[in-house]
Image (cartoon, rainbow, N blue to C red; front, side):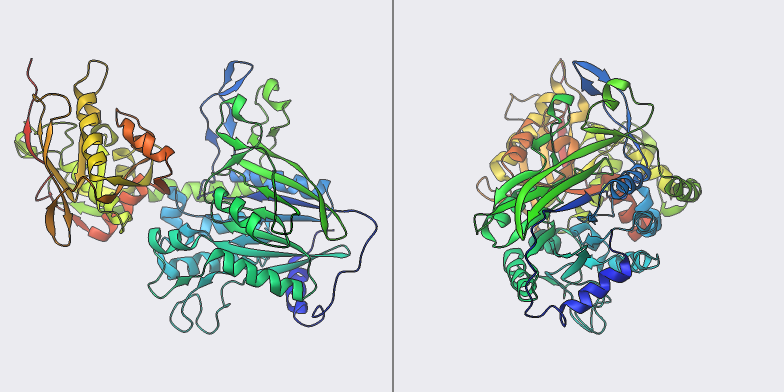
Amino acid sequence: MRVTPKTKWFAVLLSGIALAGCVSAPTTEPFELTIAHINDHHSHLLPMQRTPIMVNGEPYQVETGGFARVAAQIEAIRAQHNHVLALHAGDAVTGTLFYTLFGGVADAEMMNVVCFDAFALGNHEFDNGDAGLKRFLDALAMGSCDTPVLAANVQPEVGVSPLTPKTAWDSFQPYAVYQLGAEKVGVIGLDIAMKTKNSSQPDATTMFADEYETALHYINELRGLGIEKIGLLTHIQYRNDLELAERLPAVDFIIGGDSHTLLGDFSRFGLPSVGPYPMQVTNADGKPVCIGHAWQYSQVVGELHIQFQGDAVTRCGGTARVLVSTDAPEAIQQLPQFSAIEEHPEVVAKLQHYQAQLDEMTQQVIAHVDKRLCMQRMGPSVIEECGRGRHSDAHRVVAEAFLASSPQADFALQNGGGVRRDIAAGPLSIADAYGLLPFSNTLVEIQITGAELRQVIEQALDYALSAGGSDGAYPHGANIRFAVDMTADTGHRVTQLDVWMNDQWRAVDDLNMYTMITNSFLAAGNDGWHLLSELSAQGRAVNTYVDYAQAFVDWARQQGTISRPAEHSTIQFKAYTE
């Protein structure tokens, strides 16, 4: 029987009193725990039309995911199994207009239909500071679920942060204990420390403790309370989960997020699986640890089955399933890796309510543009109204928005084809912003040396001139400047390459390492920016999962008035002539 919210919290409170010094009584019957889980839904509440799913070499275009199917799938898992925990491994928010316009309230309302047994804080929960997270958690608490929010290593300053006005655990707690039949299961929550501090926007006084040391501390605390079935609900990336599992004693399972990792037999369907579901490793005691991740964007629900004999894990099993519509082709519906399921009617009704508001609110004015900002993919404008001879003002302000979204980045670079229209003088609406930046791109931070930076700009310029290329590859940026001679030989077209650092322009040093913010399209090596793909493969790219249009909306709101830029990244331009 599933633990109710009241029972959950009673178990947590009781753990410090009645369980102290106790050890679970040995049982002869095996105990099976089922975990239904998601992670990184990032305000993706509506279904998606995916690129084709390949079955036996044939592509099928299928509607997938959506939070209404997530709710229905988890409800079905709860109905089919005893001893079920529904867990969310963080990054519920940031990524679509549902967050831009409703600040997490829509996400919280949908999550309260599911009634998760625990939710772990992710780095993007801090994108609007501690106060923004508090508003989201207040909305989550408005439901009847009383969902435990777990964050053992998150340390806002007590009496300073709105998250901790009185005590360290006012808004969340390190772990929860669940009574499932005759068994007790403890779950500890962890957020990725360095990334959250440096790549999101927590308050300056909010700190994040080391993940391993924190986990070890609370594992020992749970064991001292007699809890020996222990799991981690983490938002620290898949590779870190694997490492943490092997270093820690007593851990039986990890449900993770942050890396948007798809586990399971999906590669043959054209989906980016990186390993089996579940993944099994051994902990520091040499005992099995079952690990589950469930990809991203409300597309997958993981169903992990863990069998215990006494307190020892004897089997890891289960399946992660991509959710598809019930009108999906039979060839897909018959596959165990996919679940054709009706949308949950309560979630559908709530989403229709928010969608109606969203349609109206996209007309909301977020800034005023004092002069037309023209879009020029490559080279100076020849239009008088744009300021003849000026380079693209639209690209410049978009690059500034990227840079504002990533305070630790040294400069921003993007491609000419990533910005799709002029920015008209007058009021700027949210709909205008999404028309300006219409693609499904996110912002990616890349560690790049000066020599590599020079190389990737040369690659972009070469592609812009190649017969099969496009002038959409041309680079535009902020906090960076360069001269371009398109008549020069390949590899020698960019000169005077500078980066704005410490309030002055500095020549790029080939040996220095810089942090660049760009869009995910380029980070994948597209538009001829091939080197970025290689750097990503080396682990030198971090996807922030901030929607690039949302970053522009947030920046525009802060500006209030958007004026023509005083400068552009291209400081000299000599065009190629046949």
